[in-house]
Length: 601
Image (cartoon, rainbow, N blue to C red; front, side):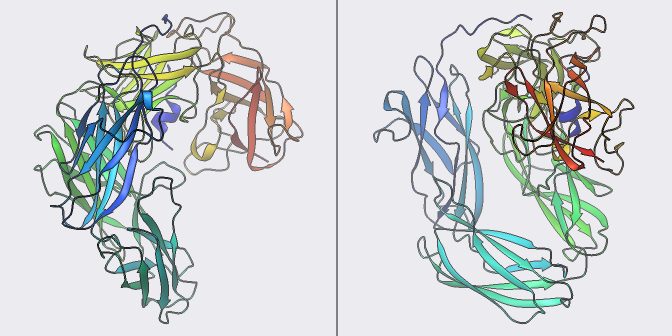
C-alpha cells in the first residue's frame, strides 16, 4: 500500500469555462515492441499516427532518450487509424547497427508547445540479436511453488521440452497474450518441484523451431537447468503494493537542477528457510558515482543524485548480498537526466511501472474516469519542484507550494501536497482540490513551477463522481469510532472485523455540492455541518444490487476540519453476510460508486 497516496487527505477559486481553442494531441498508440532486430542491422522503419482532436494544426517535434531512436513527422502513406484530415504520421527510425546483442528500451517525446495533452511519450523496446537465451537456469523450491522466466522471439515458435529425472521437477513453456500491434512474441518458462523433490540440478532442454529474423532465432536447443534448492531464493519487489509487483529495473528521471531521489525495493524470499540480507553495493557503468544503496532490514534504499551529472542516459546496478542460493542478486538501475525543464504532467504510462500519468481521483487513482468539483485530485508528472517535498501546514490551503502552482481553467487552485518523486516506481505527484464551482464538461489542468509554465492536459468533470476511498487489496478506508479499521487481523495495523449493528465511518470523494456551500481550500465547518443527500449503501450481494443488505447513512457530508473529504456514518445491517471480503458500494443520485471490501464476523 502506498501510504502517501492513499491517506494524504488531512487537508486536502473560482474557475472559468474552457475558452481558448488549441490543437489537442492524440496518439494512436504509445508503445512499440519488443521489435527483434538482427545484430549489425538497423531496425525496420516504424510509424505511429498522431491526430488533432482540437482546433488549429499540430506542429510536432521530438526528443529521444537514446541515440539509436529518432523520429520525424509527415510524409506519404496516409493514415489507417486516425481520420486523414487530422492525421500526422510519426515516422520512427531505429539506428541499431552498432548495438550489441541485448534488450533496449528508450522513450520518444512527441511535443507541441501549443497543444493540449502534450507532450506525450512513446516507449520503444527492441531486442538486438536473438531474444532466446543461450541457456536458462531456474532456482526452484521443493514445495510446488512455481518460478518463471520470460524471453522474446522474433515470431511464433514451435517448441518441445524435456527433463531428465529430478524427482518430479518439471518445466513448461507458454506463449504470452499477443497485442494488436505485436511484432514479436513473448514466452514464459514455468518450473515447479513438488514436495519431497531432492535438492540438486535437474537438466532439461527446449527444442525450438519456427520464426526467424536473419536466422538469429531458430532452430536451436536451449539447455535448461532446474536448480532445486532448500535454501532461500532472493527476489526484489516494490514494497506496499498488492498484488506483488516484482522489480525489473529501478528507473530515475531527474532534471539537472532536481534534488536527490530515493526509491525502495523490498527483498523477498521465494524459497525455503529465512532470507538474511547482509549488504548492498552500488556500481555505475557511466556518469560517475551518482548511485548509492543502503540496507534497512529487508528494504534496499536506492538513491540517485544528478547534481554533477550532465543530461543524458546512464546505467548502473545494485548487487544485494544474502544467504540465498542466488547470493549476489543484481538489481539494474537506470538514470535519465534532462536539462532544466518546465513541470510536465505525464499523459500516458511512460517508463513507470506502478502509476500512469494524468489527473486522477485521489480515492481510487483509476485512469480514464471523470472527476467531481470539490474532490481531492492527484496529478502525476515530472519536474514539479526543484526542492524538498512539501505538504500544506495550515488552512485554507495555499495556491503555491514548493514553487508549484496548479491551474484549472487557467485559475490557481488550492494545493495540499507536492512531491518530486516517489519511493516506489512512480512519478512525482501533486494533490490539489478541484474547486467546488468548476463547471461540468472538459477542464484544462497544468502545473507551473517557479513561474515557468507547464503543459496542459484535459480532464472530464461531472457534477458528482462518488468514489469510496480504497486501500490495500481494495479494502475500504473506513473506521470504527476508535479509529480501528474493519479489516481482517493485519500485523502492525489496528484492525478488527465488523459486526452486524456496528457503526462504521466510510470516507469518500466526489459527492459534489453541499448544504451549506463551502469555500474551496477552506476547512469544512463543524457547525452547521456541510451535508449532501444520503446515499444507499449495499453490503454483500452478487450483482450491482442483487441480494445485498441495504442501509442509509445517518450522516453524509464533509468531514469537519478537512478539505474535500466526505464521510458517511452507517450502521452495518443485520442481514449483512459474514466473511473476510464482504463487498460494499453505494448508490448516490443515480450513480453507483466503486466497490470496496470490509471484514464482517
